[in-house]
Length: 222
Image (cartoon, rainbow, N blue to C red):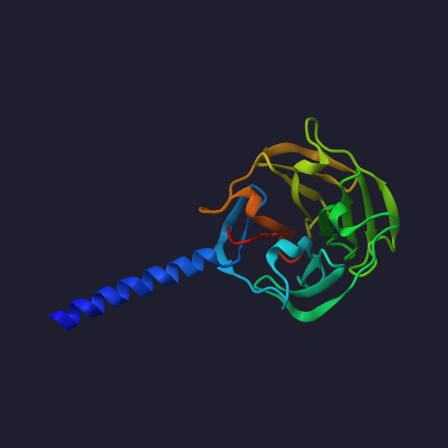
């Protein structure tokens, strides 16, 4: 009887510890623009060695093959899967437009039609390029936000694989849809929901899969 009681207590403690570990791990969900875990609840992801989730400045999903790209504060970028951020390629260098730094980035998205990488900056400009050369195709040009929104309100951005519509998620729990230079051209801000136990400030990056338009959201542990 005593042995059974001890075993039960151990199982309870171990189960609680495992549950705490799951909550504390960096996690990713899959859903829609207005319901961020509609298709898949939170599951864990790993980040490249030597980096933490707080080092991420932007993320995007390639339209051609659903590879996940991650740009870091130190000027490097990796390629992987939703749960393994450097599965396909270890970190390599990227360059920004003249006068820009990684801390100027407010959002990144990859077009479904041609894999061009779009980068939005806090000075109200956006550029287009490749994963390693962020203005290879087009130097910075101006973009507009929905009324009442500022560049600092942007949490993350993504580009739909099906039609290249640009989605921008904001800190007030709203999301809009538009073009690279007009962020609410197609749809004014509407509400979105987060997975239970997460907060908007936990989001480190978002991306929209080219294959099915599922929205992936990566969170840092609280």
